Each structure stands twice: as structure tokens, then as C-alpha cells.
Length: 266
Image 1: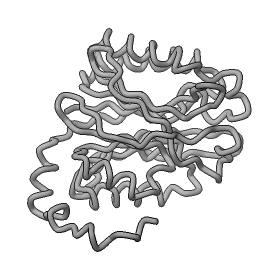
Image 2: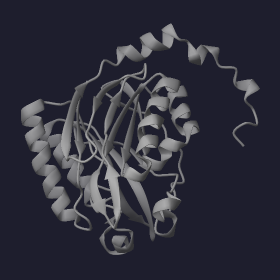
Image 3: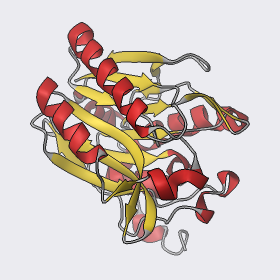
Image 4: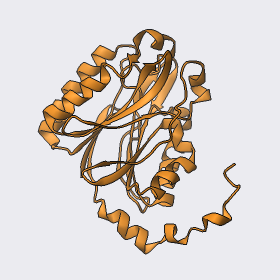
């Protein structure tokens, strides 16, 4: 399964220009790399222009939903559509969207954990539904948004539901760049699955973002790594059968004793 991951510098507060950039980039990558899956970063339509979101957020998923469906169908590619600001019933959510190569929506997820360090709770509403597994080409997958990465319970629930690949879409700041990398390795190792991330680069409102988008295999090896500062595309093919092999070699899930963990997560 071949991935093209966009480590993108986002134009603040200008969804239309960002959509034009995505359209141009995707056309070029499909022609050049012929990927099966495209991966976009968090809040790629607006960046973290939180004070402007009331005016520029999508309304009930539009126009981003239609835009991604059109591109997926036109280029016959699956799209892990990053996330975007989405106003629903008066509240604004950080919403991720996955569309398959037929242009069909297969999964949506509203970010559960809001980042106090970036003042997200003052502008956004936390998701009300649990993350769950979805499938593309028969591969079981999960998706987390940025700060969600810090909560191992969320990734573990996805792995217990069979996830073989977990995507992380992010605008992770440079101030915590060491955590960004370490947490992805931990999630891959403890859940014995691929972790694939798309993080932005650049700077907005005195916050710089650390790039370093990754593809981590189920053994915890980094098989592709982006730079810290440059906009770029990471292209990597993963072998999903490695997940089953490693889970058999080190049978963590068979060794679990969940009745002995009760009360630890409260």
C-alpha cells in the first residue's frame, strides 16, 4: 500500500487558496508517484486561526467534504483528509475525514482531546463520539488528531479493534518536537501496528511547527522521516502483512490480562 504524505506549510485563514494548493499537489503526486493513499495534515484549510474560525470554518462539512470526494474519485486514490474546522449546530469541531477512491466517505472523527497549550478549548468543541476502526482495501485503520497521540488508551482501543495502521494528522509545535517522535514510536511498538503521520511545517502566531512526518513500522523502526522545516512529500510503501507477523512473534495481545488492569484507567 503506497502512501504520499503531504508535509505542508498552510496559508493561514485562506481555505480557498489552500484547496487550490492541495488540488495542484495531488495531481502532481498521482502523476509522479501513483500512490494508493494520500495523507493530509491537521487544519489544512485554515491553520490555527482560531479567532477567525467563526467566519471561515466549514458548515456541516462543506465545502471540504465535496472537495475531497471529487479529488478522490477523479484521481482514484484514497484520501486521509487531515482535519478541518467544521461548524455543526453552532459549535466548531476539529473534524477528520476519510474518503475512498470511489469518492465515498468512509469515516469522520471529531478530535476528542483539545490542546490547552494552544487555547483550543476556548474556540473548539471536543468530539462526542469514540474513535473507531475503518477499512480501505480491506486494511483496518484508525486515525488520531495531534494531541490525541498523548493518550495511549485511544490508540490501544483502535488496536484491540484490529487496526493495522494508525494515522496521526497534526500541527505539532517545535517546542514539543521530541515528544512528537517518541510518542509515535511508542504507539507503534506497544500496538504493533504502522503509525503514519502528516505534520505541518512553518510558523503562525509565533508558534513554529516541527514537521518530522513519519512512517513507523510495527517493530518501531522509522522507515520514512520528513525534515523539521521543509515542505515536502514523503512517499513510502508499507507491507501490511508485517503487522500479523510481528504480533505473532511477540504476542502482546494474547498475553494481556485485562481483568488485572481494572480501575487503572479511571
